[in-house]
Image 1: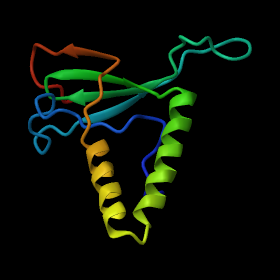
Image 2: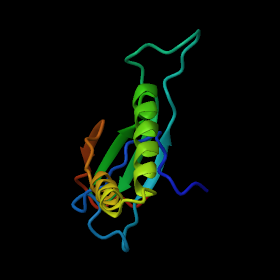
Image 3: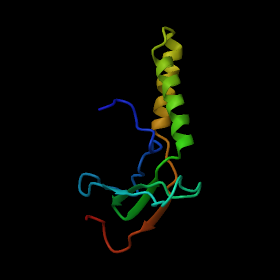
Length: 122
């Protein structure tokens, strides 16, 4: 397994208000396949797939990052890793701080729905 984050999805935290007690009701991840295209490349606005986060009182859909976004994230990861290995201690510390800041960002969902009946468990 790779120690680096995948670039398929943007790094995000699922808000605690969505899944308030993960030990009682752990969130489940359900993959959503991309929109099927008969010939050639999918249109620019095609759904590329995603993941549903089910648990708590909401259902969230996070979509797959576009190819451009994935390439951009790969470049950022390479630069950050190079800075973390720097002999300059302040530069390495700044790189680690930047990494922690990126990890803690909350991303917008593609879609979400409030589940009004009770906690989603299956």
